[in-house]
Amino acid sequence: MRLLLTLVLLITNGVASGALAQDSLAYIEARKQIMKFVGGEMRRLGPMAQGRVDFNADIVQLSGQSLAVMASSYPLLFPPGTKSGGRTQAAPLIFDDPKGFAEKAAELRMAGELVQQAQSSEQFQRAFSSLAATCKSCHSQYRN
Image: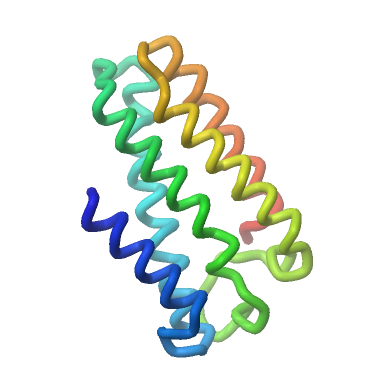
């Protein structure tokens, strides 16, 4: 987990600073990998939120932290000029409304932090519900 977080931070910092190739494909690929990771974290937490898997505070804390870190990287992954050039589900509105997209990313970061802080199954279920709603809200606007 820590290795993946380190790699994500290096990728996002590299992409944002220009250390990686300045073409759309590099950004699109970085976005896909981070979004795939986020989806995996949601699939890990979902059964716990539904009560099908016992609550595990360690998993919840690590996953919440991971989600918060990933969300913090989102605005860096969509700079101008990376709208096209490969297969992407990113809606053009991300590039037309970067401030709104950054606000959604901040909401997701905060929702991830609430998940991270959950100390009981009940707290986690409430936090996960908020997290899932935040994801759905962003997808409805910014995902094709």
